[in-house]
View 1: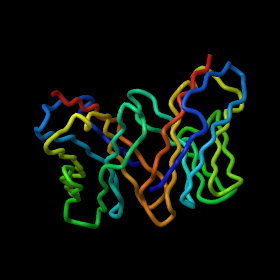
View 2: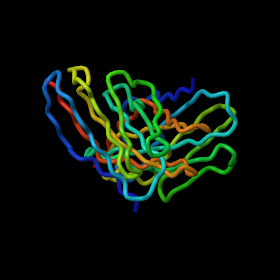
View 3: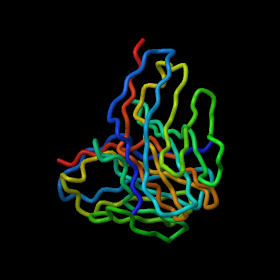
View 4: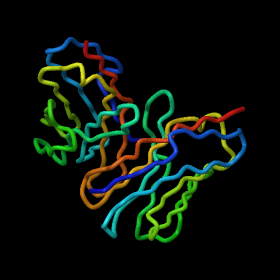
Length: 112
Length: 113
């Protein structure tokens, strides 16, 4: 079974703090994704990576950056957290030649 | 840009009955994939079923089946013999030849005992 894990289920941070969300997959997937999920808006893609050190912006990249130094790990960085970044963050991964994305359990981030 | 529309924010069904969740999408592409994902209250998103657009046959997975109408750009999910464990948020999603998965806003399914 594919396993995608995220470093925290819940996080509380202060406005202006730098926040790191970590995602690890154990299936040697090439592609990794970060989404945020908000009520009534569904899931929106923030960034994705199709290889180590490669990244592309999704629909809502503003205020976020990402890092992929190793194939199994994809980090989402909030350089200076703001209250409008309070959300559920979901990580996903997929094999490059397959279309199915597998999701982690999510991190619920609260920015005060 | 591709869009996915789920017109039913909430649905309910009696245990053991059948329910159909609606999804429509907009695309100009001919080759793409469609998915239904389930997100139970524990929040882990799980793949329910997938459909390749080039396949005419509707996908099925046990009690879950789809009605894929390519010309109408419709992709509904039918859940037969509903169980309490089926209660969740269901998301319809579209994927074309690039990496991007576009989600609908979800349908919250309640299963009544």
